[in-house]
Length: 426
Image 1: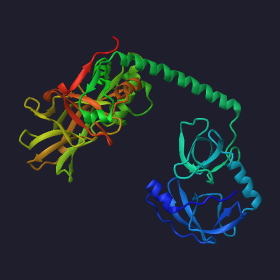
Image 2 (image 1 turned 45 degrees about the vertical axis):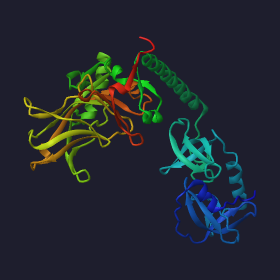
Image 3 (image 1 turned 120 degrees about the horizontal axis):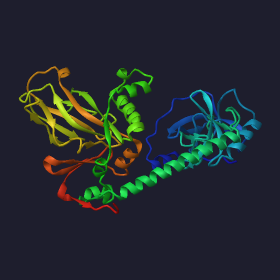
């Protein structure tokens, strides 16, 4: 039962941690199982996982002990539990291992939980707590001495074996459906051509080959979002009060039932705002949750009101809008229904920027209007796949846009730098 002590310098240097200093706490004590007594201590420095280094005030050793902020081994005088209670608590916590069922305190209630895994990157016995029996719902990482963790059945109602079996049956059924869908996706991908990159920087980020998602998109059946009488009869909310995204999703679900469609598209309006950092007037968040967009137009300007209007992806200029004399709008003609602009799952920043607005305009009169496409889960997973980029063709410059995200740069690559490989099967 020897209390483990650590050199604070080694902890800092080993993990390159930026340490925060805690506020002093009066009359704080730490229970030492070796000496079987409460020892005065002071919080020294904080660590991740809500861990804290403690200096034992009756010890000349420069080393520290480590526990968590809400450890059952910490107490403020004079509220000391007995030695017997402390030993009983220690004995059951020492039995904690992966898949141990526990009670977990979260948002003022005790929940049934399980230990999903145990990590030791800072000190041993930091546990990942997940919901039980739905262990896909993770609550976080906690040190095994935390008071938020208690012996199963102490606070939360015990789950009967009958209920566990019922939930397990549902889980197995859901996994079976998921496996079937995954097999379908694999077979579909075999029928799609692949793109092979020649840019060495991009190869460093990702494997050489990946599926050409544009070809798959062309096979999909996409219907228009519409408030049909049949749709309005099916939903119990005020359709007109819904956001454009919710209208599209309602339409998608409804039309899938009657037409077996793969997606739905709708009109989306984005307002312009002045960006003081770029010194330009910009419309951002163009995708608004959709998988792809097209027919991007800027209304409310004359052809002479600005130097140009450009589409940017993570500050990379993609293409320039063209003035349509007949419609009196600026249009990005590269992206159409058949050749949309795909979005990334991790948030590439797509912005329409008005460069050097020469005339003073009320920004509320300028809008970016486009079409969004929302797809069903199967189609989304095939389009998104495992690629780091959302790949879109820019016909006007005979190039591809590889839209990255927060951790992956975006690229524009000429078509002759991307090799097309025929599909494995047809």
